[in-house]
Figure 1 (tube, rainbow, N blue to C red):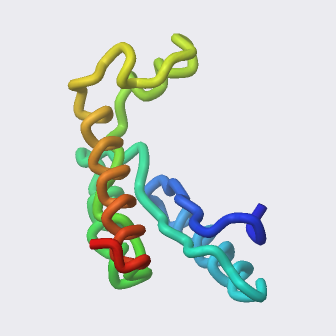
Figure 2 (spheres, helix red, strand yellow):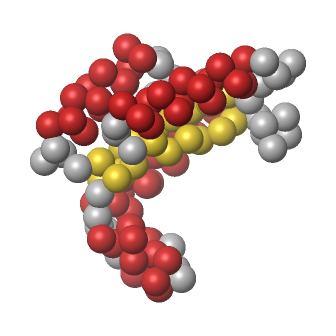
Length: 118
């Protein structure tokens, strides 16, 4: 999979253990001849938790490729599997749906910048 992909969007929960796993993935990708671009983003972000706030605020110093868009923790995200439908089908104006839209917009911008299509 890593050799076939051009870009990997990697969701991370904002915890030190997730950051460690991300560092291991990044190290593994460096061993591939033509590695895909790794674009991590935070998901299940609970801004009420000081650990989550701290990890998110430090992310860009850890890896400048971190996406700025983050997906908030929400029961609506968990509902997608129960409903077997995308979030936009049943809660298109919810905070998480808007966060996913922002993530895709940011991804589009980064792809455009990288390919010189701006």
